[in-house]
Length: 214
Image (cartoon, rainbow, N blue to C red; front, side, top):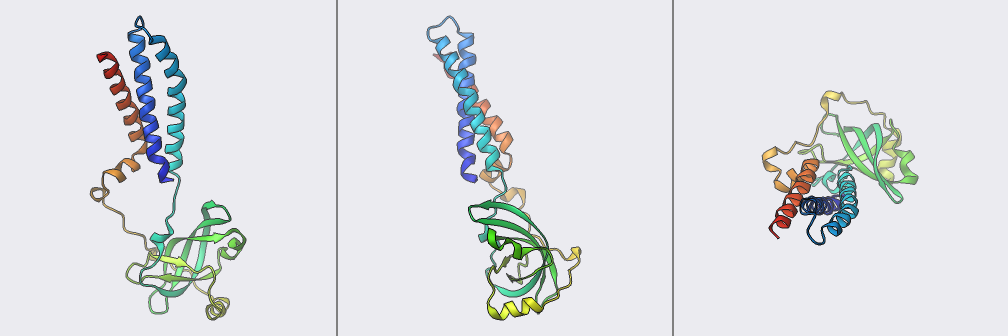
């Protein structure tokens, strides 16, 4: 989805250029080709603006990078699915958002939200209340990945497991990134509507200034 953001921003800038050219042509209407610029701009500017807005909206849809969820130093544990919802889906796979109680053997149980890419045919195995096998990182317990196909040894333990739900107070979350460490690119993406509006305005001002010079 992120690949749609910059093309959308460019299209909005070009739409601004077209709107600026229309305005400049209205001011200089007696000049040659003014009507052609107005007609051409009115035909293209709204279309570019609409497509640019669609791309910006699509780029803001939730996107889950499952690589961020994989523990670097993995320990295995059983986990109880507290709730589940579909986060996204492409082709035969769907990304599920899972609220889990993770029950490590050597650590206290805790709550965490993670994601799993699951074949549509296997979604029924991830109902609330079911027990699954996960890998987690003790130092960064929010890093949890779910095993879609546990081995025979774990399958037996899963079948016999009766896990208690951990208190919501035990929930762990990925630490938030401080605003100062985001970087200009991340800031622009986060403020996508402002960036789109600024792109249109810059394009229009540039076009109007250039048109008036010539």
